[in-house]
Length: 134
Image 1 (tube, helix red, strand yellow):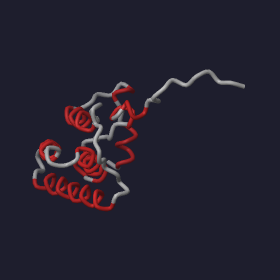
Image 2 (cartoon, one colour):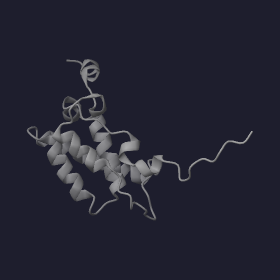
Image 3 (tube, helix red, strand yellow):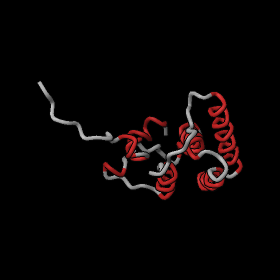
Image 4 (cartoon, one colour):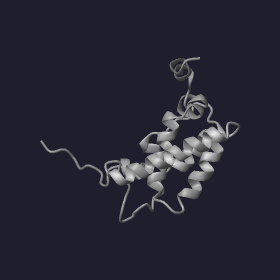
């Protein structure tokens, strides 16, 4: 089955589809906590940080290739361990890259949740807009 056909038949939870346990654990990991105010933040425009994220993504792919029976669970375990010593935003970025590019994630129809679900407070305006003046 082609990837396009698999995506065409995929229903999200919002459209009446069923979320798998793996998708639920990915969604939970990618959710940004509300208290994520750090002095230095991950930026995909910082060469050093993006290089480190690429290295983590490569580690995720190696782990997935070494564990064909349960690649997603092993990658999530390693990602949880890595967040203890590394910026969690960097690990989230690497995990999203892994989900986008690795065949085991695509074959299991894992999806990256939209930003409004991952980090609702960053998508909502800080203040309600006032009345429009003509």
